[in-house]
Structures are given as structure tokens and as C-alpha cells.
Image 1 (cartoon, rainbow, N blue to C red):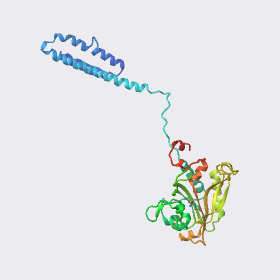
Image 2 (spheres, helix red, strand yellow):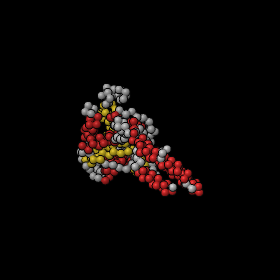
Image 3 (cartoon, rainbow, N blue to C red):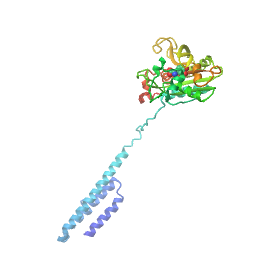
Image 4 (cartoon, rainbow, N blue to C red):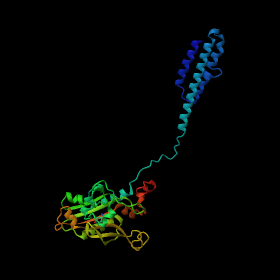
Length: 335
Ligand code: DAH
């Protein structure tokens, strides 16, 4: 009897190897657990076993019966879950669309600005965001008691160091390092003590421009900025130079772009004036040249500074500067 049990066990193990379809599982179940199966057969013959062995053999038969039934159940479960997974493949179903990032509108704008000026012979220079008070103010002819310093006084980092409030600092760095001719643009982040609203941010980006050589004139500045405006906003735009004041340029101008929405007729975007302010500019103040050791009698130059956010807002018709920094993909993926 014991031998018979062993051989059933062995045969079942062998059968299991080929137990890989629903029909085969059922076939094996009938073969061992069915009414005329191997277990039923051996149970029937239990009466011929001597009394003293009966209970031991009976138990062994039960153990084997349970083992076979559990194994087959597991097989059945594994088989149904794998076929369910297979069933789930629907070839007509749309695939999983990965979220692909896009280039940030400020980066697109900055790259375009860089490209235009590089074609005009400007090189790109960069400076640190943590600056000395001297480079941010004194060297640019903004003394300690100058009223224009208020709007610029930013985040101080200990004594005489601060987060720069404009990229004009890089002008100073370049001129201290190198003799003319200089023709460079200087993009980067700047910081202001401004509460944030639709038009203000405590951090934004600027591009500074500087050209210094013998005999650089205001007309060179106008020519360069006109080419920039037309390449950035289209051939039809015009620029207007309004007299203004910056401590580091003399004379200074604020430069307006003919309104790209109404073409200069006057609309809500340009508040009816037909013009949109886009940058500040001027001829480098001789006092600045003296600070960096240039001879103002020998050299002249122009400088300008523009806000990248402002340019991007005009170019794309964006009405709130905060949108650039909120990281909302619904906004970002439009570019
Ligand atoms: N630094 C000025 C600002 O942040 C912008 C500027 C105006 C830069 C005139 C210049 C310039 O180089 O000539 O508001």
C-alpha cells in the first residue's frame, strides 16, 4: 500500500511538469481526485489493509489528497491570473503618452536675444549673482546716498555683498579685466526688493549690452537696437528713444517699442499711447570709465539693459510675470 502511495506521488510530480493549460489541469485533477481517480481507488482498497496499519495509511492518503488538491488549485490560480493579464492587452487601445517637457518661454526668448546679438558680433559674458556693493553701485556711479539706490537695494549677504540688482555689474567686471574693444551681452538673474504682483517679481532676468571702442556713437546704439527690435518683433516695429536718467550712462534714454498689438494707434495694452517701454540705454558715463581705469578721452561706448520677462511677455502676449515661475505645465506646454 505504501509503495502504491509513493508511486502515485511520483506520477503526480511528473504530470505536474506538463500542467500548463486549463484542460491539462482538469485532466490531472480527474486522474487523481476524480471519482474513479487514483486516490478514490486507493481509498477503496483501504479495507484490505491490516488493522494496525489502517490509521497510518489512511492519514497518508489524506495528506497526499490534500497536497494534490492544493497544488492543482495554486496552478489554476496562477494560470487564470496570467491569462487575465494577457487578455488585458487591447491592441486598439491608445498607448501611454509620456509627458515630454518643453523649453521654458524665458529660455526660448533668451536664446533668441543671444542669437540676434551674436550675429551682430556680440559675445556672451556672465557674472556672479552674488556681487560686491562696489560693482553693483559705486562703480556704476550710484553712490551710497543716491536716491536711485532705493529701488535697487536688494538682499544683502553680510558686509558689502549682495544679490545683484542688475546685470550692469558684469560691465564693470569685463572692463576691469579687459581693454577695449568690447562688444558683449550679459544675460542673467537679478534681484529686487519688490513684492510680487502681475508686473513685479523679486527675481527676474536681464540682458545687459556693452560696446566700447574709439569713436562709438549714440547712432551706433540706435542702429544696433533697431536691428534687434525688428528681428525680435518683426520688420514693422519702430523704436522711440526718450530722454531719461541712469547714473551709469550720459546721455540716457528709455527705449519704447511701437505697440505690437495695435501698431501704434493706441490700445489697452499700450494704455492708449501706442508705445511700450522695453529697455534702458545710453552712452557709458565717463565716470564709470574712470572707475575701471579707461581713459574717457580715448574711448566711448554705449550700454543697454533689458528685462527678459518683459520681452517674453510682449512677444507672447503674457499678462502676468508670475506665470513664468509657477511651473504650471498647462502654461509651459504652450511654448
Ligand atoms: N541697469 C538698469 C536697470 O536695471 C538697466 C539699464 C539701463 C542698463 C540703462 C544699462 C543702461 O546698461 O544703459 O534698470
